[in-house]
Length: 423
Image (cartoon, rainbow, N blue to C red; front, side, top):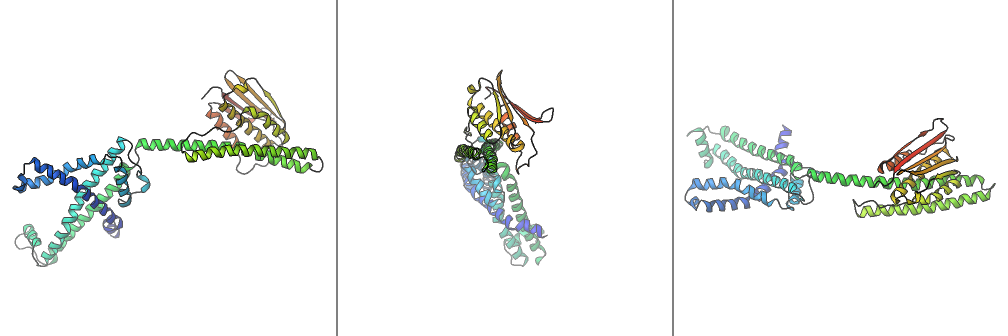
């Protein structure tokens, strides 16, 4: 019983009733205009014929709704009715559009909502004006006061209706229940239709999903850039610092070389970090803008190999001809793949020799990195993203990769192939 009373006369029901009355108020100008037009069409006969006057009032409603529907085609109408529905109809604010309509589909949906709101609001407003006075008169008539309520009772139950509260009170309560039920039902119907008619259209949802996908792709790329550049630098600096500390007293010259390598790696990492953060700031200023290209290319491979050598990982390189003519985006991604592969050697195998082969043949760049397995090393927390990043870079360029132990089980092999000329 309490749930029924709350549904019919609770706070939400009262707020929705205000929203419906607002719809009735918005209907009045269109209804009056339709009444005038119909009065002119009937040639002024409504002044002398009550039946025609009543017919005009009844026909004014179906004529007023199309006029309101046309007015709601204005793009800004979507914002206005969405704001009212969000505040009064009891709908979730996130489900309703907050921008003007940009397509005819969105305009038509807004017009459908506006016409439905005015129709239901007009009915509930009319009942709200007629029912309370009728209830009061019925109750007064049941007490013997007389007036219009007595006339209604006599028409319904004859010249001598039952007296006391046995008749007027139940009729009055029934009318009030009818008003509350109609208001609650109309409000619930509007709340149900609001997300369907005032929410984003399928085209808008698709555009939002595309923007979100682009943003996620940009974030993933920036995360890969930071992981590859800064992660490599920190791994190299950690090993070089540890090596310098171990031989500081025994071999000062080697310690000096390690400290020089630390300085060089840190400077390069800061430069790459500035470039990546610059792209991130540009994306924040212009959401949805393409991610800018940052980072070194295969031309800087010699410096990378030198840094790995100072960190205790000598790399023997077998590079074929034509690498300098590679497109810059492809060369940049190839550098990052090689950098991540060598960083994995440094992290997981330690100071062991590695072999890198780069070969450009038949429109395809093949990269192969092998190294001895080395002693078991503790995995750092949060690791395991390197090979996934390599696979993502290769897939983005329509290439592929494979990694794992060699057939004899003594070495680790990372092989990546990238087509040349793929946009």
